Image (cartoon, rainbow, N blue to C red):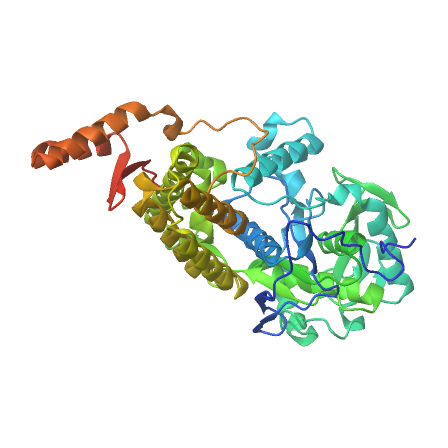
Length: 518
């Protein structure tokens, strides 16, 4: 069976958008393989073939997962902003990912089966229902955070035949062998093993001495392509007997099927460098004799208030748990992209609170622009030149290794340009303001939601507040300050603060956010 989509092993990319023109810019990213920032060199000019490892759907994805997915999203948005067409694939793992996955040949239970036995899993009749529920929840959170949809989101369980055939081919080519417990990839047979992570065969031999040994394997560093297990909750029949595929094989097969033998770019979290991506490289390059991916990027870990995120310490957060605390989904997105992906990010109360305030700036600017388009006069465009320059600076920052710190600063500077003239914007200025906010939203996804969420709404504290009353108190406070009645003004601030409403004063006026506490 031939797995490649085209005879030459290159998946068709499709036509570039007529709305975009190729710019002279390129996209420079840190490459994990070469340990340097370098331009993305595309196999086909103007077409980015991009694979990013998706979630294992055994529970709600946490905000650390979404930081990684947002890195991929920013790659897509930046590539499209410079006129490239992006063929993006992100998978769903719904079988084969084991609980002890920090070594090449993982052990323990399948994460899906383990989740079904948990307290949360009691609501499901079987593992298939559990997978469907958490995949739907993941898609809802994905939409809430304004992430772009992949052109395909393949599930591991939908591509079982291809994985079985790949395992057979690797045996035929001498890279894999069968044992009573499964089919294993021989690490010694692939001389390039370790080139991404630095984990050479010799290093691995030392490391696996700490791991439970399997006497059926030639080398303990060898990893499974297929696990024989006729008692597993999710199993398929293969030439090797009943069982399920190895986690690493799934991504190799699906990436190759939809994007061709060689990818332009492969992404994931830093925890996937080894063993997952190292094993993907070995399998894929052994099968094709070609480079698996020409560029690799990995997002560094997320901390919460200076500590590793953990359920045991009570600082483990999902998107929906933050929404229930009053966070705006766009503010969550803003906070998660506020730090550069190549450095660890500390997600804090203050950071989320600041993100809430900044999102309000975009909302107010959007409202001011809409008002100008409807009621503005025929005066000149007084903001267009400044906004165009700020957008170009934001785009330059993003093409330089996704420098979100600079890009977000430039985006916010644009809101100040709009707000300074908010009461007197002409229609021409309104048009420039709308163009700017539209372009910033396309680049960073922080101005407004891009689509409705199909799933049930999450009820948040923000949805229960009386906005009219809050605005009336803000107006009263402004009048009190004007009359030098500072005691009453302070009293109003304290009253709202006690209700969980934080007032934020700026040269453009006073706005409010619902306070969140992690």
